Length: 399
Image 1 (tube, rainbow, N blue to C red):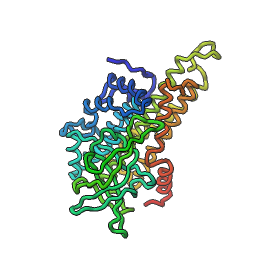
Image 2: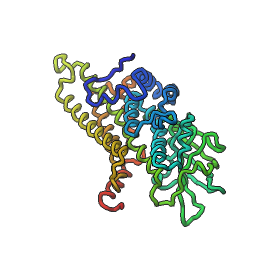
Image 3: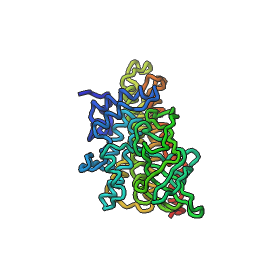
Image 4: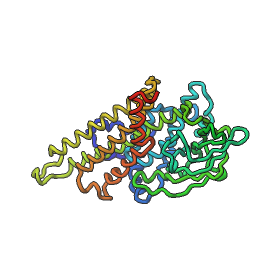
């Protein structure tokens, strides 16, 4: 059994040692590959094959369908454990997991409208998110992709989707587009596109600052026909989201936040290990950990991580238990994501400060984590959108 290089004194590290599905040998392999994937801007193909073989893509599926039957809280912990060792791998798989959990919950409530999606995943389907669009700062509330209705309830989608994580392997892409067939009553159409449908193409444009292994290329939809049974919802613009679309937000936001928590926890553990090993000339050769400044930096980082961990755990527990926060639920989810990714960025900055100039060397893992954590606040909703919604909700401007 492989012994992983971790800091045993970190209070929250128990969350990263072993998971429900994966063990130390798995994490060691993923960790070893992460630097190569980042350097080569390569998709995490070997990780994906291992994770698929281990059943990791089905962890949110019920046991009756061949899954592990994990709750949101359990999936979130699995994701932050994986992110500790392989951030880009974990982040990309979030875009698969968050479609599954809400479908399971709806079925448990007697709604089988998306049960077909669970059957598809049980059969090996890989899901991905096709929501990013150039020029769309309204997110799911609008779209620059056209959705033209067909007889029988289907639609034809035309346009471009950006940041399609899992581009090399997805088989079903969740998308949204705008239906202007009634100019006075525009609607947003949510549906799944099949990879092998005519008119679907991938344009390899992904070459980013961080989380480079996600394979988040553009997807071009050129008159792609979607059958009626793969249309999830059709909503007039400005109307509330239906249950399934609400559900994916309630899974997506905590899962993304947990990935960035995992990045920050790893960065701080590396900094702590460095401060114990590195010797200070100013302290007559004693460890850097004995410096008051290092102790204060580490204390600040631990406080930030502890607060983020507590908020993450509370949020997913409330979701699993059906706690009713009423109209504050959206703000709670937005706040959880924003606080966690902002805290994670601050913690990684502290880790770099503690380690010093060597942390920015390409040979140092911290250099990669420093880049990876930068993308956290950019995931929708970005910081501006979060502050807008939370502020207006608190002031009573959103009912």
